Length: 385
Image (cartoon, rainbow, N blue to C red; front, side):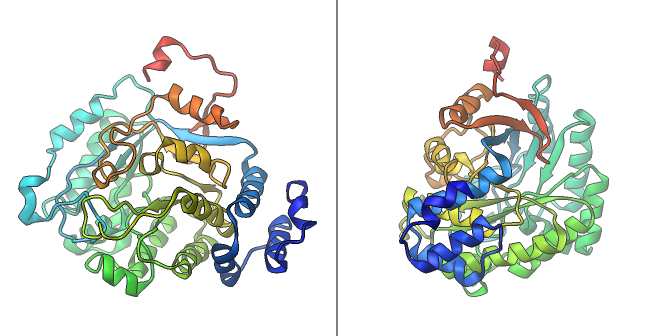
């Protein structure tokens, strides 16, 4: 409780002090208290509370992994208003569609490199269905049996299952039997149904997203969770979104991490909506860390917000900044993110974390420690990895 003593003994708003006391005593805050934090919590106050939580859970540790992304296609049946990445079938000349061999060649390009995860997401393409991807995952595992395959948003999976005329459980079971290990958190956007109808009306519903992840957890497939913020939503919509995730986590315990994703307005149908400030980014991370008390980790996705904001977020509740990636992930660079060629070497990531006064830990997808970089001296080979 020591780190919160200045707040608890100060003359701040009694309602804020009451929330701080609950955080100090590891008590869950309510929906109304979460909303109050968004409405009245200043940046320094929120950062102090969030940092208290993250240090209680993880000390000074900051996690990252060595991963790469495969984006098989950006051709998509759905027309999400905020998306700068996808192209409709009628725009296919502006998009891409990788062949199976091209995808496998990308996996082969990492032979001999200490990558622990491949992240596969993309557009919802009518020619790339459940059995196509099941076969692809099996071939990836034949090339690299030890690699963790994190693949397909609930939106992609919902379409695959509907097209294959199978239940969520049967579809996920097929993918798991072919080697899929976990699910990413994309496609959640914002759960409020009215807002969802305005920005992504034709994709799976919030309840379908939640049910897909509930089913995956029941089958022993962990997943991540996301929230798209900073567009037309209000603070109450963010708290509602986190509340639904918190309830599902109470039920299943299957989420690894929560990842707030910033709306970027470059080259999409919502370009008229201004982006929120870096201060609001940090406030949002902090409230998420305070509210999501049953999520072990809060991740800042550095290719989206930029490495410098990601570094600042480590003082506002964030304990994970994703991975080395490479320059193949275009979802945010096409929307105008600060990182137009999102790639960092392991040494660069470690130095970024150390420069923030934190303790770098390379993890695997499930947060097992791979390498502790606290006192690590890099060799020439490491610099290039």
